[in-house]
Length: 135
Image 1 (cartoon, rainbow, N blue to C red):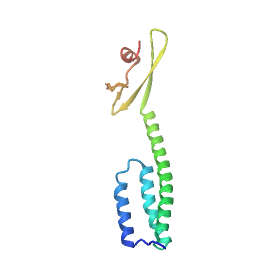
Image 2: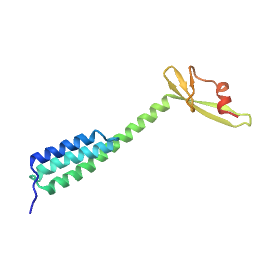
Image 3: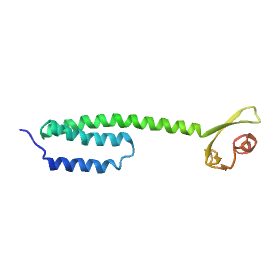
Image 4: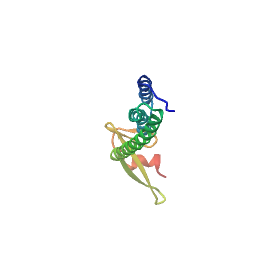
């Protein structure tokens, strides 16, 4: 016995998937959800409205959507890391015991922000950072 899904029900499912996708935090989550919805639609059409076709399509579409979205998340994370590295400067502080402490300051507008959130209106020097980060 085959169970069939009507076109009205399919439209309702796709609408709910679209609304929920807005709340997803990552591209992987959104991709999985949208892929499931699209896969369900394609599966329903390919299976001539059968519930089996809809479920198989949803599973395959969800998996494919997750994979594509996850790759998008990785690419976005790499871009953010590259941008952070481009917007930061490492300053070596030579300590009294001969060791070296490295401090990363990040560009922020026309100034720089130190690791503890302190703001400098210019690129701080080793001498300016030593009292805070050196010993």
